[in-house]
Image (cartoon, rainbow, N blue to C red; front, top):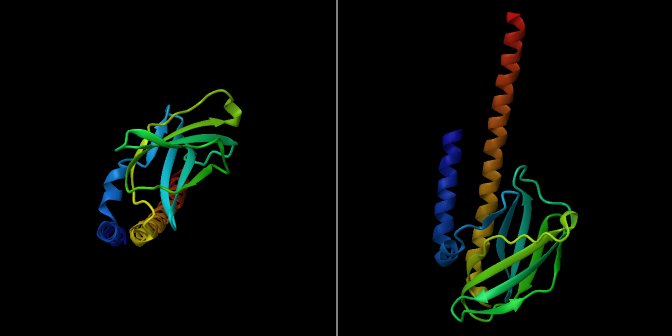
Length: 187
């Protein structure tokens, strides 16, 4: 069973690479940033017609759980080629550990996305993860199919990983129950 899951995961990743825009895969580098060893911030780009949704996920580093306290954040976008900032957001509120900005990029290219955030339970403390360096195909819905493919395949990979985790947990739970009954019999 485990070998089949690994084979399916490899095939899905390979098909993700083949059906997507390879520039996007290489540009992200690391979609997750760890801030001061406390928080993990993830960025996901989701095309919405001519615009691009930048979704930020705020999680606790230790538990992996989303940060549910109110978070306000601020984003700057810098055009890498022009070496200038093309956008600066007002303060935005994240809801249940997820924040979103929808922006229309005027040109294809690499952009740097800078984020600053503040948690309601730590007022005055501004966190700044490392910036993201992303490739954005500006206003081209024809190229968006690759992104939808990435999203769909990512969802499948998450589902397969969840099934593998669940089956492993179920198998381990069975071993613990058996081990517990054996140790009671030995006493």
